[in-house]
Structure formats: structure tokens, C-alpha cells
Picture 1 (tube, rainbow, N blue to C red):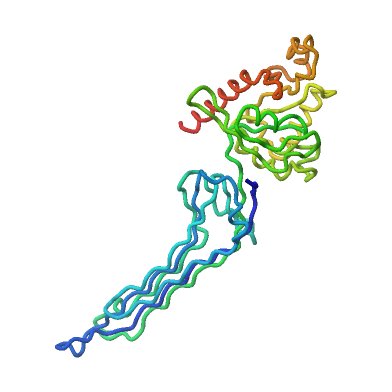
Picture 2 (picture 1 turned 45 degrees about the horizontal axis):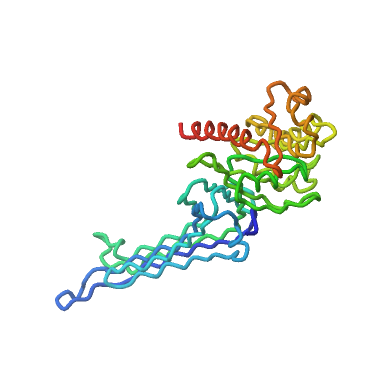
Length: 338
């Protein structure tokens, strides 16, 4: 499935139907009173959260959404039919903003949650409403209110529990494919991952969390270099981050600091999130060097940094990493439920 996280659409709500001007006519009531019905309300355009969706792909190929108008009222005090509401289903984590002003209208975070993009116009009142002691036969009614037309930009932020952060070819995609059923593209050249990939990681028989493979960051990503700037925003939703650094890197500490700098430059609050370091590709090291990890490199990282030597290809060290991440995910979920 192609990942689409940004799309602009045009929405238009329906206008309300006009109220009716009508008078009651009965055999023994030659001068019956006003009897005009109200106009129907115009249809609205809504967003609704759907946890079964993961992209905005459907909206990319259908960018115009116009709700029908309300029908006019009629005689016998009959109300006009309301215009049908258009409901656009979107993934959880979708943010809606006005394209012209960049004003945020809201975001969808829960299943079934709705957000009104364009409110339908109210139907006009029929002449029945305007009868009074001094105006027995009102010959006028209200017109319906107009609808709204807006250009809306929708942006999806992944709702993943764990986000993988690292330079291209750090082994993030291989890690996701090793601990979940996800199959992101893996190859030995930069920017293999051109779109985020989600994987569901099982912990025990009944528990799981979602891991996101974010496209590789390069130095200067927060300034728009490489692919990272497009996807750094997805990391804002993660409960815990995994900084993935290959053990073959010449200076582990320098790479670690560069990655943290890119996160901080994009959003300083990202450094408030808990994170661990996965030292990847340990299968490339001699057995003797593997046995000495992580003690042999601990001094290259700040005191207290959690280091987990892993090899996704050889399935080495993955369980300790999974259980450490699960502890952080549990803590974040408990905090959100409190």
C-alpha cells in the first residue's frame, strides 16, 4: 500500500432550502392561515476517524467533495428534505487545516471521532413562523442560508508507539521486518525507505505495540535536506524513540549527538521523550568484540543511556530490546489513561 500523508481537497456544503409561502385552504375555512413549511438544511462535509485506514490515498484521487442542497419547504407545513451529509473517512492522526490561512481546524485521534469541515446552510423558515396578531397573512418566507466552500489541507501524523530514528542504511527497515510482519523495502543504498512503514510487534501472547520505520535522517534534515524533514513530524506522536546506530560507525557518540541535534532543531520537545540506542549490525563484528558490547562503547554516550546491541539479520539481541520498549509503551499508555 502506498503511503500518502499529505493532500489538499476542496469541500463545499449544501445551501439550505427556502421556506415556503403557502396558505391553508379548506372547505369551511376560506381564509385559512399561513401553512408554508421550512426548507431543509444543506448537507455538511465531515471527517471521521477510521482505525482501519493508514493513508490518505483515497482522497488524493478524489479531491472534490460537494454536499447536496436542502430542498425547499412546501404547502401543508411540510419541511423540505435535508441534504445528505458527506463523511470522509481518514486515518487516526489526521490534522485538518485551512489551506489559504494555515489555520488548524482540528485533528482526528479516536475511532469514530468527527470534525466538521463545512457546515451545511440552515433551511429558511416558512411563512407559518411569521404569523402574528397584527400580521395574519404573511406573504414572505426566509431564504435558505448559503453553504461553505473551503480548500482543506489534510496531514497525517503516524500514531505509532515506537519510532526508529537513524541515518540511511542504519538498519531500521530490517529491524521492523525482523520483529513484525511488516515488509519495508530493504537495500544497501541510501533512502531505500521513501515512506514510513508500520509494523505490529507482539510481546507475549496478547500484547503488542506499533513500531514505525521513519525514512533516514541526514545532517541538516530540519532545514529541508534529504527526506527527513517530511517525516520528522511523525516522530512527535511516538511514546518512545529508538536511535539506531550501526556498530561499524567510525564515531558512535558523534553520530548519536548529530541525530539528537536534528530532533532538537525540529522540535525541542522531542528530546523530552524517552529513548534507547540500538547498536545494529553486530553480526559484522568478531565474536570477541560482540561479547564486550555494550560496555566497550558506553563511554561514548551520556551516562545512563540504555544501549542494546542487536543484529536484525541474525536475530540477535531483539528480545531484550522489545521488552525494554514495551515497558516504555506501557508507561505511556498508563499515563494517557490516567
